Image 1: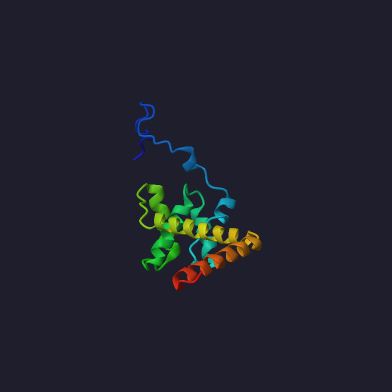
Image 2: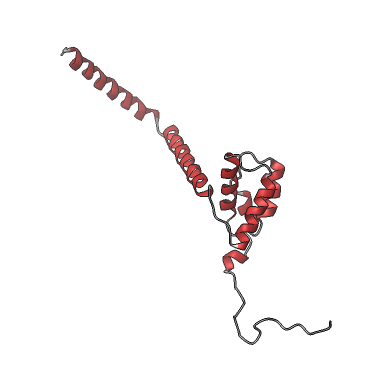
Length: 150
C-alpha cells in the first residue's frame, strides 16, 4: 500500500502538539548528577549506571529519594531496574512519590544536626568553661537549698 503520509491535525496549528517546558527538555549537567545523594546501598558501579539512567531527568533527586525509600522498606530487589521504571513513569507523567518526601525530610534533618554539631565544635572552649562554672554554682545553690544549708 503506497499512500502518502498526512500528519494528524496539520490544518489546525497547535492541536495535538504538546510542547514540554524548557526545564523538562534540558538535561541536567553532569556535575549536577555527581552532586546527587544516592541511596547508601548502591554500589559504585550501580551509581554510575544510575547517572546514565537519570541523565535528562527533570528531577533526578526525587527519583533517587523514592528509590531509597523503597529500598529501605525492602520492596526493591533490582535497584537499577526499578530506577529505570521510576524514570519511565516520570517521563510518562504517571510517577507519584510515595517515600521520596519522607526520605528528603530525613536527609535535611540529618544535615541540620550535622551543622549544629559543627557549630558546637567551632565555638571557643572558654564559653563552655563559663557555662560549666555557672552550672556548678547553680547546682551548689540548689543542693544547699534542698539540704537546708546556707
